[in-house]
Length: 394
View (cartoon, rainbow, N blue to C red):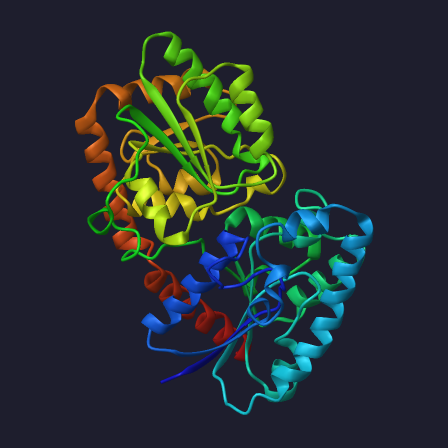
């Protein structure tokens, strides 16, 4: 069996159950699972699993964001850890066929293995971190220095894995990376974990329930959903909204819900990972309303795949990734940014037709089973990696 060394250098990305950054945790575990399902032996070196828990549990992000001094300190720690962990990794006394690294700020852990052991270094990126961490996340005080690390890693890896076409294009433009070494691999889902057959629904009432799961960032635009539902409630539609997750906009959106006096909105907060499928099972329709602001324009939302795996119809803004997952009128409805009337029209259709909801949900589930499990995703990654590496040998 072939052997993979999986690397993640971010101190705040951890596979621990109580890790604050749920999306990265899910992605890391999913990719590792995908390799194992494709009969690879995976050796893990995940920095976030070996630092103090206070570095990556709840409140760690707010702590870093609270002052420039803390951001600067966090940057220095990342830079030092990059140096220390590269030395440690070189001492691992095993032979590997591939090194697969999730890119993190100020990290290029796989570089020395490529240079000194001639092991192909596959680098995966989920964002332009020099932009994201200095704007949306406010987690770095040294964005220009981070950009240099980022450029070095992108230029020196053998294969660069991007989550969307949109991110690929941005990276090519910003860092002048050879497009021939970039492959696209969106997120995926654990189809056994996210299956309606395995979970009893969690619900707070018997009303038609629109649900959301994820981090509460500005680009999710839950306030836009509130406006649409408030108007529909005024027309007599009995609708509830359930929001599972936490984030920087939680207080803002709670206050906004009170301000407009919308009925039946439940902010659940962050929940245990094993409870997420139960909440989704209790949704009638799932919402994914990314607006094209900041990094929201190039994301591959894990929640979309989880919604679909649970057999739910989707309400989503029409942009790159969602247009590849949702066929309007087939497994959900797409609406344009700021087109509230279009969103309301879609909600009305799903509200009034239970059979339509069931049919759309079945189509969502079948699409995930056919194309979007982690096993299928990693199989595609491996095929594309082989093509790029073979091309480089010619």
